[in-house]
Structure formats: C-alpha cells, structure tokens
Amino acid sequence: MAEGRSNAGIAQALVVGESAVAKHINNIFAKLDLPVVDADHRRVLAVLRFLGVSRA
Image (cartoon, rainbow, N blue to C red):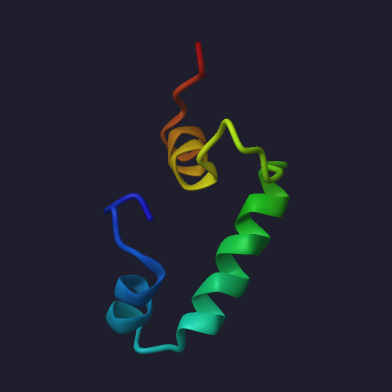
C-alpha cells in the first residue's frame, strides 16, 4: 500500500489472490482502528500511521 499499489498490484507482486490481499488489508484497517468513513481514505491513513505522521 505504501508503494501506491492497488490490491491487484499487491496480489501480483506477492503471487497471491486479490481476495487474500483484500482480507489482509481489511485486517490492517481493523487493527489500526480505521473505520469506513466517507470523508477519509483508509489506505492513506494506514500508510500515514505506518510512517508515524499525525493528522492535522
């Protein structure tokens, strides 16, 4: 995700199915307590949290 890859791109790089990638990404969102919110993009928020950047 931090490299800007889509689920399909991640799946291809890891040689796994897209459904496996989606499942793992959803688990990451849950562990980071990033609920679905229309105003936020969870992939970006997950990467920012990984990088240790706080939101303004």
